[in-house]
Image (cartoon, rainbow, N blue to C red; front, side, top):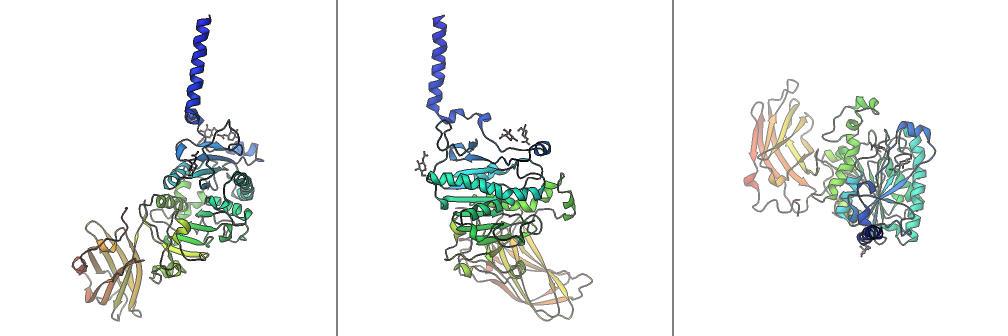
Length: 474
Ligand SMILES: *[C@@H]1O[C@H](CO)[C@@H](O)[C@H](O)[C@H]1NC(C)=O
Ligand SMILES: *[C@@H]1O[C@H](CO)[C@@H](O)[C@H](O)[C@H]1NC(C)=O
Ligand SMILES: *[C@@H]1O[C@H](CO)[C@@H](O)[C@H](O)[C@H]1NC(C)=O
């Protein structure tokens, strides 16, 4: 008996010692990893009183296995935590969950943040309070903020600095973050709003929504401001992607919006979720997503805003860089920034200004301008009127102007446009914002006849060393 007994004892001891030696890491098999909760309509109806806010912690030491993070985690030796008080803390706050499901992108965002910065990433899980009736959810958001502020207070007692907190709030989560900021009187380091929610917030007092007074620096990305997102600037800088309304590659079928609670949901929120995807992409640092200050999208598209003079020449960039790279002080508030993006990661695009000057026309006309490289072309149509002779427009190209080989003009006048011959005094293209002294590429004095496309080769016009300073991953 005693031999058997001893063997078992030894075995138990071995296990104890080895698990002690391996520490916390050893305990984290898959089942031990924390996850966001989800809720069903039935559960929701049965117990709608509690918000059940909980926190998940991800760090570089547990990238794939979230830890539950509670107020006791920092003091209770039985729940060892990876939270490191001397590191900055990113707090992710999700938004409205129509169907009560957990947001699937949270871990991807957390990982993108951790790849870019060695930080504590705390995910606020308030799925339970964020589900179903939107108006009730809006009632909950301040209570959620209040609960988060209790946690922040406790972390502060342990030595975390308020300025070391950076909240990243998606949709309604942006206003949750904003209210946490209000509770701390704007002393939190930074809040980033990813398409901050619009419905029920646009007309709201700044006390009730995200605004620049909520943190030392507030930046926001707008991608669906005509629908789920907010159309007004809410930060120090507000990036309006492709005008902030309709995103490239997202289907424009607004009529299905009535069916928002049904399967088409994912389809309809494409614009809204684009802010998140662009942000995650920006965190990789593959290419810069630069915003250009302008008063309106129309002005931007008409080529009236080409530089970042208000920022002393340095254009704000989406991502983690301090103050988005803005060096002027004080940082402007509610500055609208515009940029065009492509439809898929990494979303960066080159902004090209096209300027066309023609001789007076007798009849209206239409020309199609195409900028071509060996493998692809980007075209832009211009309606030419009899009363205007100078046209400016902004177009995007996946490649920089340096790599564009030819410019092509077609007189595409349909039966409505009868002008047979367009005399072009000059056509010029230039890339902006420009970080070097770049002269626009111009071609002067030619005719574009119907049915006879005109084209010009840029290659021989260029100074020899080209394409040196453009964004290529370093
Ligand atoms: C989710 O919430 C329910 C209460 O509604 C709770 O019983 C359950 O433990 C939670 N699950 C997780 C994974 O946190
Ligand atoms: C929701 O949670 C339940 C248990 O808490 C789980 O069985 C179910 O798979 C979860 N659903 C989703 C979509 O995560
Ligand atoms: C906490 O972070 C600091 C600063 O990055 C680092 O020097 C220290 O080693 C970390 N502590 C632990 C226990 O990882």
